[in-house]
Length: 251
Image 1: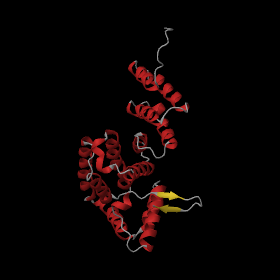
Image 2: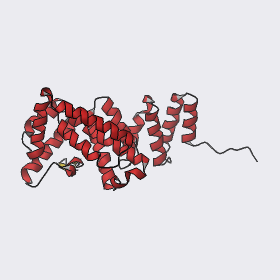
Image 3: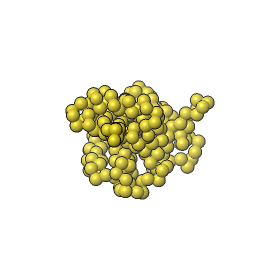
C-alpha cells in the first residue's frame, strides 16, 4: 500500500554485491553484519565463510572475529582460518585450530554421521589434513600418516578422501628419504615412550612452533608419570589448556 518492500537480508545484499562484481561492497556489508549484535551465529558463519570462498582477503579477519565470538561453533570459519594460516606457513597455529575443531566434532558425536551433514563433513575432512601441517613440517611424517589414516576411518567428503590418499603417498615417499628419516625416527621414539623430548622440544621452539613445544612437554610428563599412557588416537584430540593459575594441562 505504501510501497514499502521487505528489507534485504545481509546474505541477499552480499550476494547482490558479488553478482555485480563489487567485492569491496560485499566486504563492507559483511562488516556491518558483524557490528550488528542481533546478527545470528549461522548468518555470521555464512558471511565470514563467503569472504574466504570468494577470496576477499581484506575481510579474512572476520573469520578470526567469528572464532573468538563463537569458540564452540562447528560452522566452517575456524577451518577456513586454519587453512589461511597454513597457506601463510603458520603451521603451529593452523594445527591447533584444526585439532580444536575435530575435538568439538568428536565431543558433539558427529563423526559417525558425517555423510548426513555436508558442512560438518567438509569441516572434518579439511581439518584432518590441516592437523598434520605442523607435524609434517617438524619431521613427524609417520605420525602424520597415522592421523590421515585415522581420518579415513570416517566418511569424509570424496574430494578430500582423494587429496588425503595422495598426501599419504607423498608422505610414504618422503619418509623413506635419508634427509627425512632421521627426525621421523626420533619422533616415533618419542610417541612410543616419551624419549628424546628435550631435543624435539628445542626443535619446536627454534623453528617457531611454541604450541607444539608445549604439547611435547606435556606429553613427556604424561609418559613419565603415567605408565599406561599411549600416544594413540585418543591423544590426537587432547587439547592443551591453560588454567586460571597459568598451569598447562593436556585434556
